[in-house]
Amino acid sequence: MGGLIKSSIARKVAMALSGLFLVFFLLQHFTINFTSIFSKDTFNELSHFMGTNPLVQFVLQPVLIFGVVFHFVMGFVLEIKNKNARAVKYAKYNGGANASWMSRNMIYSGLVVLAFLGLHFYDFWVPEMVHKYVEFAPEDSTRYYHELLLKFESPVRTGLYILSFVFLALHLWHGFASSFQSVGFNNKYSIGATKFAKAFSIVIPLGFIIVAIALHLTH
Amino acid sequence: MNLTLKIWRQKDATSKGAIVDYQVKGIEGDMSFLEMLDVLNEELITKGEEPVVFDHDCREGICGACSLQINGEPHGPDRLVTTCQLHMRKFNDGDTIYIEPFRAKAFPVVKDLMIDRSAFDRIQHAGGYISVNTSGNTIDANAIPVNKDDADESFEAATCIGCGACVAACKNASAMLFTSAKVSQFALLPQGQVEATDRVLAMVNQMDEEGFGNCTNTGACEIECPKGISLENIARMNREYLSASLKG
Image 1 (cartoon, rainbow over the protein chains, first blue to last red):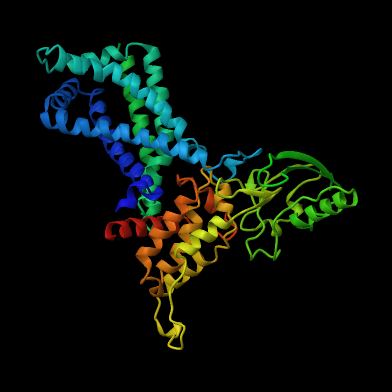
Image 2 (image 1 turned 90 degrees about the vertical axis):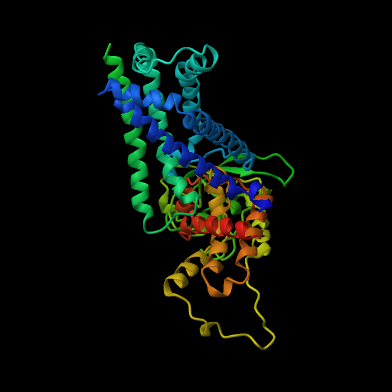
């Protein structure tokens, strides 16, 4: 067990499992967001539940934050180790001949998603924490939709969100499907699982883009 | 055809190398890539210059000695062949060809295009074998039934010639495909079960100690492997490793 912590395979599996966890979170986040474009009340109700339920707030939220931090810190650690594994670079390297752009540039698509998370936290999470745990403002279960709408008034912010979702799709395109291989899942069901992962990596970010545009156009 | 070659020249392991330009003329399409380099070396020797050092042995795609990163790809642009089987008809008259050694911290350059791939030997020594009593009581291998699919997959894994193209192609210089092939060829057979747990732990540990990078599933290794070793072997090794770690 001791060797497991520092082994390359354990790191790879840890990246895959934390990534899979974040994929489930994305699906849940998207489901709630999607309700905002056809039912203000449903969105408010779900957001109120997520924002006030103690299990979500004090158990799932810290687990999620740990998952996000772990995934990107491990991503940086692996990137540095991998760069060190080839001290002298090739004068000519034809990476496109044998691997997709997405698979070769996970660190860059990941960095864009990380930068987006900074903006997203600044937009929603920080004001939410201040509202609830600093100002101890009285809870108004109908405020969520209005707050959401205000954020998407700016075309610049809406554009930044759309751009980020494109990079999220690029990141998921390789990351989701490759996580199966990392945990040792490569058999007759892999083709179907990979197709599902590729479809997910397009559908969910596209759904987020549709929500962002719909909210922007609501003004 | 006439070609411009941009070749990595490095005096020895400690010297700093650089790309040097050469012109070769009258190269025929039926020549192998190594024969083209032979032509260059004969010209260099005639001129009193130091020939370009490169690894080669069988020249029929079996031994795994030849290497070379050609125009940014291990063993060049062709698929399922080693450099010795790459024909010059894959190139055009007037082409510029970059020729570099396989690059990895674990594969230090010895001279010019020759690299030290003994890291692979040490991974193999760590557990790539089975212990059989050969003192006269050896059991006939044919007496042990083996599932046909397992036998085929094991054989496919065993066709790895250890050339190092997987490491050279990988953007992370990972040796997962090589190590997983060597783990798989025994993991799939009943004869390999006795030492299965120790084998995968020891071989992965040695692979990590040699300084190879981490696999990020780009699949470049599988595409560039001259023997078509499958990524399924890496998934199998991951399963074997996790299972062995939890047992140990």
